[in-house]
Length: 224
Ligand code: 13P
Image (cartoon, rainbow, N blue to C red; front, side, top):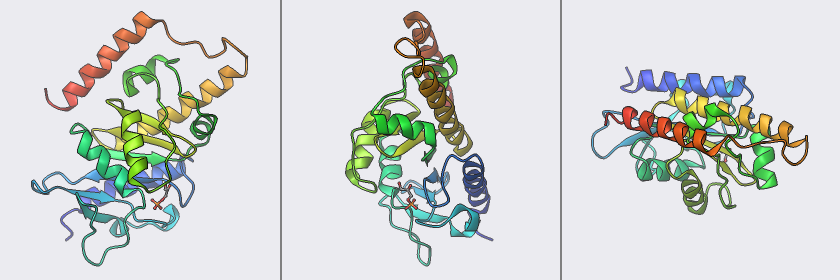
């Protein structure tokens, strides 16, 4: 039996779900999780590159070390492995990363617009606005650094001209963050169609309270 069988199954289920929800095309996006109990050197489980979700099998998922080197005899890991690794390096609270190419979020990413805090749920679950990264070529260390700058201590960011990255203390939570970004992006784009003043920010005092709730949840998920 494969030591990581249940984690393979969980990541595979999430991949199927993000494809089913239309957050990615068959060949786009990727996802990973930290393999807890892998020892202090650390290991990740990550999707393979260029494998359509409708053909993906749990055994296709790739175990990589923290240098991004795959275990022997595995498929080639995602071309965005550097992005995943950089997030895990910078964010001890993150146990899973999901990268999607959903349509409305990509509209904002193409227009160069961060999504302001317009819905209560997004401040509580994401930490505030969904910031947008500087542009960087896919698969590069530069993209990994730009994404981490935009992410800061939040749970999601837009990748300029590219898509979304969402993080969380579990792979299902990282998926739900990406799903929330897509719904909020849709609300933002539609509200903006009413013209100036269409997409109104929440009141500042409410944003403050909701950001405190977000920070409390982060501390609780780290057991602090
Ligand atoms: P991979 O198939 O290499 O994960 O690439 C998909 C993608 O969306 C790159 O940003």
